[in-house]
Each structure stands twice: as C-alpha cells, then as structure tokens.
Image (cartoon, rainbow, N blue to C red):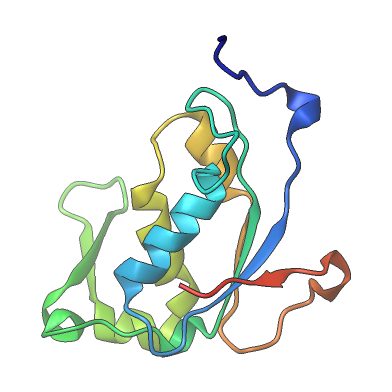
Length: 142
C-alpha cells in the first residue's frame, strides 16, 4: 500500500466561518490554524499546502482569561536603538482586535512558506458582518 500524496489539482479549498464571540483567544487561534493548514482533512500531508479559507467574525468579543488583559504585552521594535514599543492587550483589544487574533494565529502556523501562504487565506473582522457571502462559507462549531 502506497502513501497518498496530494497533487496541486486534487486540493479543494472550502470556506469556513468561525464566530469568536465568548471564545478564548487561544481556542479560536488553534481551530483557525488547524483549518488553515488542512489538518482536519483525511488527505492532509505536511509537505503540501492543502488548507482552507477561514473567516473569523466578532474578533472584538474574544475573551482573554485571567489577568492577561492587563499583564500580557505586545512588543515591537522600530529598528532604532532603544525603540522597543510595548502595548497592553487591553489597549490592543480596544483599538485593533483583528491584529491580536491574527498575531495569535500566526504564532500557531509554521514559520515557512506553507505558513505564510496559509495566513493569506485568513480574514478577520471586528463585527458580525463579512463580505464573503458569495463563497457560501460553512459555519464551523468548535
């Protein structure tokens, strides 16, 4: 019996909608990363990009447990000496909740070409509306 190797033409990409309202940031990110990689499919192969498109709605209503809103920080460096910027997640969730969700998902994807390509199939929206009704996305419960 030979091992199944998916070809580029054999891969079908579905569309899924994940509702983040009342869910923790980690569980939303883990489910989205699984769908983006294609690990939920029986034809998954680690060397092939066989993931699906993911739409996340209600990103502003995602939950961070414990004291993470006040203690968890987002760091970025501007490139200049001594210019490390830090932002609390409470501020980040008020101003850019889409970025916080995207950053969590990006951390769960592999740091190679497959992970970067998978991240292009992610769409995150602050509210409950999205402009992808024409793709007939399926609602995914997790």
